[in-house]
Length: 336
Image (cartoon, rainbow, N blue to C red):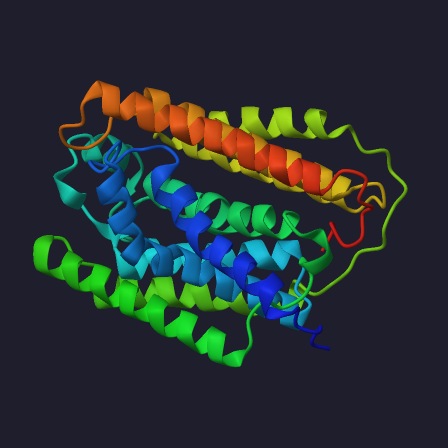
């Protein structure tokens, strides 16, 4: 059954917040691009990046809340959009020389699988990055800013249509730019394969993501104890080598994290403040990684480190605000 929609004064700020936070987490958190440290370019980039990342985040979130899909299903939907983004829209998953990035071969070749025409390591990190940082974390964090509205739809049908159209327009622009400026394009078979994987993930999210395991009375650590392992795991994923060993280790870290969080989240002692600690830890890891990242293009060190500092402070402030909003809150759906 569809849950009631909150009043406009409540739901629209939340929807806009998610529309903006998703691209910030996806593209500006680490500060890897030539726009790093340039406020005007960063703001202008949101004209495309907000619908490109915020659009899917909103559509995933709204579909899940209307259909009763729980967090495993939400992450499956986020993974599906990650496959679409990397495999079909910008086609970085199948590129042999994406944007002429100097270190692209170092990422691609060690785990390159010729029949698939892709490197397993970059494909894994691109898709996981989208699923977790571009979509999953922004959804969880914005929902935590108003716990009472976190399980209700924020948009009506006209709003959903507008978001979908804006996303398709942004995706079409990115794809057109890729086709016009890049020499490596995904083949019809690769596009069909990516679309099939995305469709299977979507079907699995809808069919299996609505199952509700029985809650437990298991003890749950304090929020800081939840956030610290999240930070460590996220840092590990960022710095594992782009080799088959790195692929195996990344899969192991992601699997262990999913199983651990899934176990804790079944407890009726798991609450919104634990979710906030979890996602804040992962965001802090991304912000810290930015200090070590080398941006593309010619970015002045002062601009780069100013960008990294502002992002880190922003993450801490946003996490603190979300934690304050959940202080004293009960579990009340944090598992879903």
